[in-house]
Structures are given as C-alpha cells and as structure tokens.
Length: 204
Ligand code: MN
Image 1 (spheres, rainbow, N blue to C red):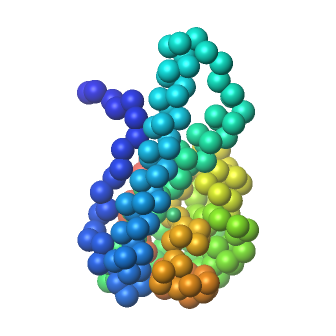
Image 2 (image 1 turned 120 degrees about the vertical axis):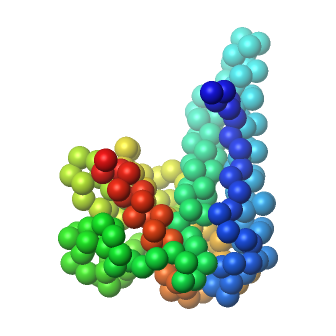
C-alpha cells in the first residue's frame, strides 16, 4: 500500500443538507469546505516547508513551526472525527443502545448526567475549542475532555469517541451567539452507532 505523505479532505458521510434544521446546509458547507479545508491545506504547507528546509539544509524555527503544525493537524483530525460523530436526525441510533449506553451509566450514573456534564464543558470552553468524550486506555473509564483550540488539555493516548466543535465558525450562521441552543440541538444529530463502534474498537 502506498501511504500518502500529506493530509487529504474526507468526504462528509452525509449530504450537506441532511442535518437540517439543526445544522443548515450553508453552515455545514462553509465549515467543511472552507474551515476544515484550511487546516488540511495549512498542515500540508507546513510539511512542505519542513521537507524543503531539510532538503536545502536550512534552519527551521522549530518553536513556531511545531506550534502551527500541532494546531492545524489537530484541527484536521478533530473535524474528521466531528463529521463522523454526526448523523441525520433519527439515523444515528440512540444513546441507550449498545456498550456506550451501559458504559456511560457506569461512569456518569445516567445518560442525563453525562449530557449535563458534556454540555457544561462545551459551554465553558474558553475562546475556541471542543468538548469530547474519550476513553482512558489505562482505566477504561470514559472521560470528558475540554479541548482549547485544537490541541490544549488533550490527554495523550486517550481514544476520542465523540466530539463537538464549539468554535464560533461551527454555529454562527445558524445560531448567532447562542451556543447553548447549538449544543442542545447537537444531541438530535449525534451518531451514537459510530460512537459505540469507536468504543468497541478501542476496547478490543
Ligand atoms: Mn470547526
């Protein structure tokens, strides 16, 4: 197999208009084709710059290069996970199905309590960032991560199962400044089947 040396854009696993009314076609199209694309393009441009400097034997500003690269690759990976955390309403299964349903109860006590904690994490993310549900590989406990930007507060090696983008660019066209409403509607378009699949794979 020929492994690509650069990042590429994943197609969405659904049509641009299929998350309406919770996420509009315009909002989703701009988010995917402009914002996510920019993280892919910038990641690749930085990699090309690194390749060129190595070839030419010139200096790299390691600090700023690595900081930019971490932000942009993080953006690409989290957006890819985000699209695969979503499904048209009624098509993504239910939180109470499968292993994920029982593991959430085991960790949080109830599905309601999990949603409450996740929502609070998403609401209180400072600046731009994400809320994520992840699995700790050592304790096999589910944990909520509050990721700032694309790369701060991340636990190394944890497996991310579900992410919610709370950058303003994810919701401003549909919800203006109403992040709470955006998060509330997010629960209608979660792809629990996929989240469950990721959990089962992580525990194998
Ligand atoms: Mn985004």
